[in-house]
Every structure is written in C-alpha cells, then in structure tokens.
Length: 109
Length: 119
Image (cartoon, rainbow over all chains, first blue to last red):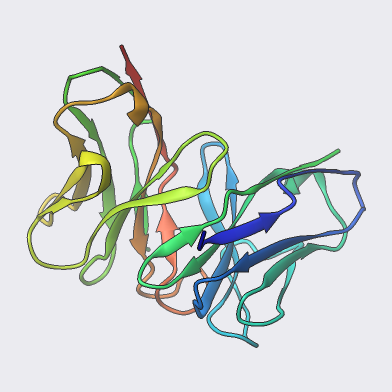
C-alpha cells in the first residue's frame, strides 16, 4: 500500500544515547517533514525537506539533525538524547495533500 | 503572527447528536485551512480543506466544515455523530509567511481537540 513508513514504532533511550528515526515514502513526493507531537501542544515542525538534497529547520530544530538520503527517505537523528525529547515523532510527505506515517513513540530516560 | 486555536481540549457528544469542533485562525492574507483526524496509535489522516470557493466544505466520513471569514473560524461539523468518530482532531493553517520555519507552505497545527462520542 502506498504511504509513509516509519521505523521503529517504539524506542527507549538513555540520556546521552544516539539514534536515527527512519522514514520512507513511495508516492514520489518531493517534500518531506518531521514533526513531534506532545500533549497539549499539537504538532510542531522539526525539520523539513522541500526536495532531494535540501533540508531546512522548522519551529523546533535544536537537538536534531536530518538527512534526505534520496527522494524516498528522510531520516531524523538524535545525537545525544535528552528527556525533553521524549515525544511521538511523525514523518509526513506532501503531494496534493499531506500523508503521515504512523509515528515513533520515543522515551528518553 | 500566524496561529491556529482550538479552544476546547475535549468535546463530549452522544451518538446520533450533531457535533461541532471549533477552530479559529489568524493569518495575513487568504487562509488555506485543513482538518485532520488522529485515531489512537495512528498518524494523522486528512479530512478536508478550504482553499477558496464555497464556505461549506465537505470531507471524508460525513464531516464538513464551515469557513467564516468575518469570525476567522473554520469549525468542523457532522450532523449525526458515531462512536467510531471518537478521536483527536487537529485544525491546521498553511504557513504563508514562513515564520514557523522554512519556506511557505508548511502547516501550523492547533493543539488538538479530543472528541468523545458515547453510545
């Protein structure tokens, strides 16, 4: 089925550990996004990529890095995880509308 | 500053009754407005959007939304609620100015409203 695939679905990290969240879409969309969702705060944009080879900061980019590996894949990296990064992370791609992945629930202890 | 407000954290409705989930916005220029729904442990799903044209927009699953320019509102409505409509609903506006990071076109989301429909 066409859509946005995120891995992993769940992850627990210790403070200071690093990890990469993976995202892939098979809809041939140019634009891809990483959001975080926190209770009572809605979704906030971390980084986005308007096309292969380009990335830009969103509203809350601190503590994160991204890579647009190719048109399909857009990864989000936490170099040194902090408890404040405990959240649910969503990847999305934009064609005529936005398509969201099912999310990665990350806990940093 | 551009913003979206959802004044209710939660809306409770009895099955079969009409439902309204409220959204107000603040943008410079003409707004592009969206509603998304999120079921538990799932990503957001598109319901409907307003770009231009008729103020009453029809979307998926029997939902509709009314754009009111004078009141800067875009309330989501459904004539008869179902228990299966219980979910988290997000209103969003397109970031025209780019103030929330990046170029124009990214979405600015409200905080979400939890809809609970009881049998």
